[in-house]
Length: 199
Image (cartoon, rainbow, N blue to C red; front, side, top):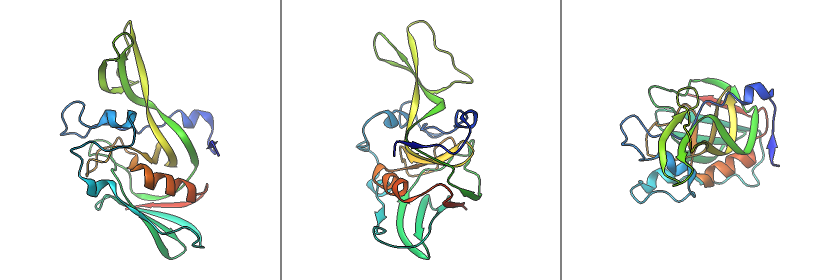
């Protein structure tokens, strides 16, 4: 399954979240980790990269509860808790809204249409590691690289769950970042219409 689309193309282009550094982080402290392999930076607290999954073979309808105050997402099958993932939700300037939602799209290779980096094509040097297509333009010899959001599970307009950097606190542009092992488990076990509760 490469991608399941349940929204009009115009809506899909409005993906608003990206893997950006938190308000207090120095430039380059977390954003570019989304462009590299899944291995966490050496200074990242390993407690924030672990989760667990015990849902293989368990029957029951899937649902997800996202607890912003805990920075954790819980996966249920029926009434059974079968998985937990550490997460990074939206920072104070781009909060992840509370509410009851449903999975409306799954895309294994999703990229942000709004956020990314601007890179010098000759040297490969990153010129802007928190670029926004609505605010920043590329100059001669520069290219905009859209932020990757692998295993994207859209549940609230431009907001979804996906693989991303986990600094241990709310740090995204609204999306719910997860470590890759947990994002892949969640992705494989949700279907379109799976309930997502954000508290």
